[in-house]
Length: 269
Image (cartoon, rainbow, N blue to C red; front, side, top):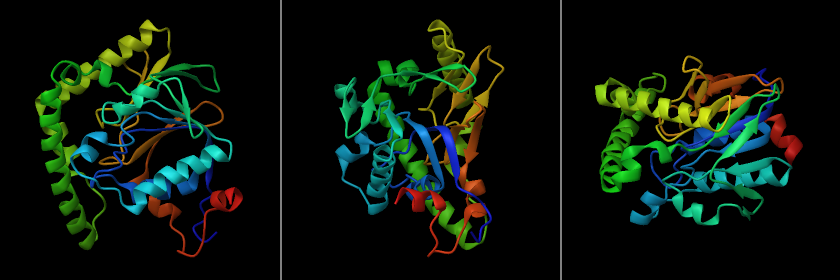
């Protein structure tokens, strides 16, 4: 292959906060990522489809449909697909405990890594006080967030034309706000406390769009990030090692001529 980079076969893949159905979703980047990565188990850790936005206006380009088809194709080829709905796709919580098209729908899961660690997998909105007790305020925040994402899209286009790498205005602004930083810390502590309560060695969550792996909270805290700002995924290798992939940073290493397909797709075809 001309890129010199081999497709990656993983034990587990964790994705969240793709927000299909919104203009901010980086679906093309995710589709590219999925062409180069396969896994025995794929966890969709909530907010995969943005039901909030779709209720207000239908937006579903081909790339968003391609993501759904790509994931279902992986399930048909033998991958275990586990969907843990979040607050934006909470309509799927009516179907918890069922299988839809080969996809398991669960409220939470315990994942055991290859090296024997037990990880609680949960979206995390259940531990967001704003979402639980002031839903109107969450919707108000959603409007402001979507405005920031619209500005983010404009900034991104300008930066690409100028030859600069991807940079998220909304993510930068969020981390500069003192209250946001305080909220993130409280959220992380709440999820760690829940993981400890259920006897897990760590937690994998999404919801706040802040990708990180932390080992300084008593037990391991892993946030998958999102495919709106950070374009991140959490992967488990076959030896149990956990890694975060920031696809916008490494995707150029996987670039190939348009007519070439990754080995992963050739095998799956």
